Image 1 (cartoon, rainbow, N blue to C red):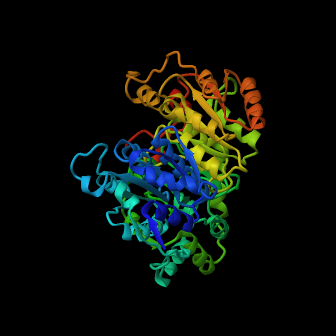
Image 2 (cartoon, rainbow, N blue to C red):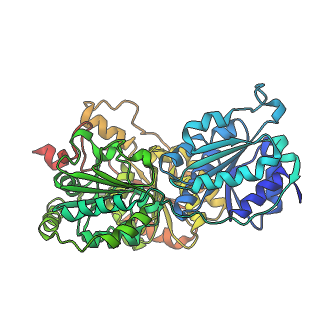
Image 3 (tube, rainbow, N blue to C red):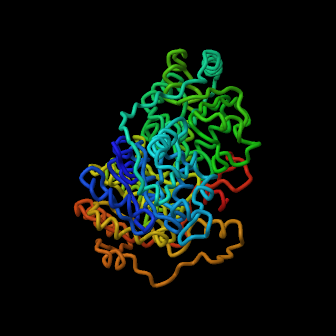
Amino acid sequence: MQLTGAQIVIECLKEQGVDTVFGYPGGAILNVYDELYKHSHEITHVLTSHEQGASHAADGYARATGRVGVCFATSGPGATNLVTGIATAYMDSVPMVALTCNVGVSLLGKDSFQEIDIAGITTPITKHNFIVKDVAKLAETIRRAFRIAQKGRPGPVLVDIPKDVTEKKTEFTPIVIEQEERFAEYITEESLERAAELICRSQKPYIFVGGGAVISEASEELLEFVEKVQAPVADSLMGKGAFDGNHRFYTGMLGMHGTKTSNYGVSECDLLIAIGVRFSDRVTGNAKKFAKNAKILQFDIDPAEINKNILTDAHIIGDVKEILTRLNQKISQQEHKEWVDKILKYKETYPLKYADAGLSGPYIIQEIYRQTKGDAILVTEVGQHQMWAAQFYRYSRPRTLITSGGLGTMGYGLGAAIGAQMACMDKQVVNVAGDGCFRMNMNEIATAVRQKLPLIQVVINNHVLGMVRQWQTLFYEQHYSATVLNDSVDFAKLADAMGAKGVRVTDREEFQKAFAEALESKMPVLIDCIIDSDDKVWPMVAPGTAISEAFDESDIKK
């Protein structure tokens, strides 16, 4: 059948099972939006307040579901406004397809109105990107984009379509999309045997879990593996929920703001089993001193991650779920009671703690956990509140913490929360923000109101850029350069003005009441929580030092 390019775009989205698109229209993409209008009963379009919000929403949708998130933008500034969201998805291996439209083919390269080389701009931050100048190639290009976004290590793909290509007609033949097999090409018997040998010889193994275990849906296999190996478990920020945070073997996050238990334990182990991690500098601290007593066994789907930051003694390349499934059949039941007891004693000796009185970030996170019974999807911005959310909310299932890890994108959370809530209307979504982050994309409150979403926006408001101030306090002689936000912005009134409900709280009782009412309201609610400007995230590892040198406030006093 003969279809226009715009019709092909919509038909290809339907083939892929896309039910929600986030975007913002403009002149170059009008043909696609006109066709989308005719299919509004099949594909929901969420009009965000800014294209960056659309890209973050597509990202949040993808992280909450494991499916490809989709966003639309027009040419020029519309397309460039997606860039931060695309980079965020790239750094955290999030499957996303960004569809942009450009000026007509004959106008490309002539500095035409709202023309930009968005394919060139996004080349370093996408798995692949395309500019489609021939309508006959459009359908296969979109199908390839979805395959690339999902296959192997996921990531964002951009498809740029000149406006005249959306107008022209060509023959279109629909197809049935087949599910890709798990990536297991490089999983060899030799690599499995070597891994099993290292595990069985180890006396003090430690398991380090990252985002790859979440992406591959490997939680069941991971639990079986942990119980067979009988080893303590630490995770990265991106790995939260892959392993149950309530399990007795769980010791908390590893790295700069990880627990002392995890940092000390990994520093003392004789085998570190790294599952779906990329050994970020925020995890390793001084890489030369990282796990210096241990052999390193790494499982990862991306060959580029092997020996990139930390040299391994052995590795297996492939889908983590598939690796663990096969390895669980090879290893016998292990027993490391003395080692495990030592680490569990560390958990008792070095618990995460905070002030007994007053409203604080950790208290707010624990109260959210208590009232949601650990069953919410928590989304965060970036900074102190993000670390508190990682430390004090116990994630028992994957895809329940949605946060920007690799890029550290301030302004990410509210858009991502909208995407997650659109994907999971049966779940309570809570976005936790600092006041500095919230300012960046707070206009998306209007989007949440328009979509009648029951999400809760918690602003942990210390009137400063908290994490930067913490560094200035500890390492820059308290030179608070450009980090004080002591102005007259009233977030509660702002929420009211946008059609949400806004509440300001200053103590624990007020927060308990406000959050309980927000859970019952079934509408967007913003809770502005006033805390002390000098509250800090503990423990901490100073830059350039080993993670075994983690310190907290009591260490400073000593």
